[in-house]
Image 1: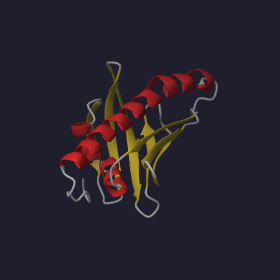
Image 2: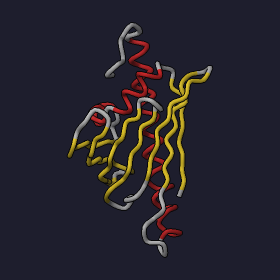
Image 3: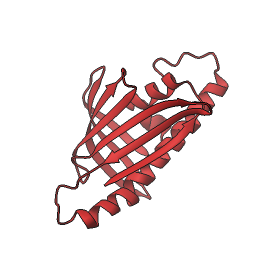
Image 4: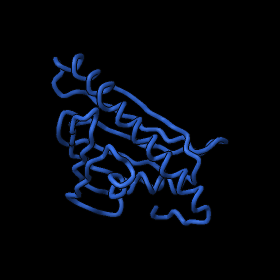
Length: 157
């Protein structure tokens, strides 16, 4: 399974990157995220339990977050739940109209016989809608912050 979501956000690239990397902010700015629980915390690597809601259904998974500031990418490796083994990459590219933020999810479902049935359900039914809402809410939050606080430093969002 390979799926991607993208959006243009009109905010400083560093602000977008740091906001996306700061999982502690997510439940505060993303209404569909119920919680993020840190199991291990570091400057560039975190182990977390993430929980969201999709159409009223609670979902959760354990993930390793790796923050690559040199490449301006955030990687997530899902370690538990239905999406175990999934690799997620957030990328940030400046364009003339704003910053293109893209989330790409790649999963090879571990039970090969069920993969043709399960991958479309996971991808289209859960991953794509949650990622789309995440990007839309992050855009709304960041663009509002920039318009209300144009001089604000966004180093740690």
